[in-house]
Length: 344
Ligand code: 2P0
Image (cartoon, rainbow, N blue to C red; front, side, top):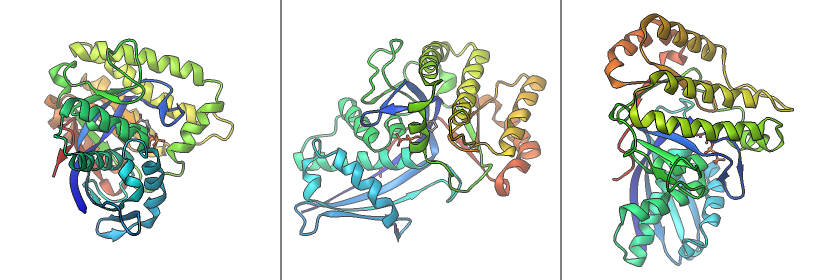
């Protein structure tokens, strides 16, 4: 019997960063992210149950991608208990990303959450259970986490919290929870203009970055501060009335993430000179205009500009006149907090 499922799932950008893990992808501190719209993975899965030759075949953009297979196989092993039929199934995976190839945008969050959605959907077809959005999405978020920690947060629209925090009722290290209902309307379509400083592959994997935290003397202080930042940010985002504090936490989180990587016994630097040039421009522009735009960074050189939608025209005029020269081949992506995954 062959079953199919197709889902699209977005990437996300963390405001409070997940950096440091233990056990099977359990976070050392809670994190909070915006779920994006334009940057997503569209995936189709075909599963043949009780196959003569069980295994995984991966296509990306219509081409075979055997290089992706080891990570997917280890993800499937972690799902053995939850999806026992996977062990004897043959799985064919085909996906595309909507963001430009080689834009240096991490795709593990969108790809692994799309895969968890397809697998959970197929599991429902096998057990003939109807989709239940609440508990079902919690289960999908837990499965996504086993593939990639940040993927757990992509399952919910607009914003998510992953990791136990005393400030967030119902939060868990096992799965992310939706956070849209709790935040002020200004954040429901918050803008994220992603300036592509470098389109090349990351030189240091997230896995190496997470591992580095295990031996870092600053790590306990970092986890404590991330926890405090999350507690403050959830209060700030409920009202939306303190843009100064929102900015301060977002930028501090971004720079701490990079500072941690510069502080280990084998330090590395994921910013590029143009990353710094853009950051200095953000600080100058904000001072001159009073527009509440701030930056955040992922584990790479690209810069995410975060701001309310009402400033879209001002920010784009500034990006096109002053920042585009710092972008690789003038590339940037206009994204915003968005609707979350959907069946396709
Ligand atoms: C985050 N990042 O919170 C942080 C901030 C990047 C910078 O989570 O090892 O690919 O698969 O759990 O999720 C990127 O790491 O790591 C990440 P794994 P993941 O978004």
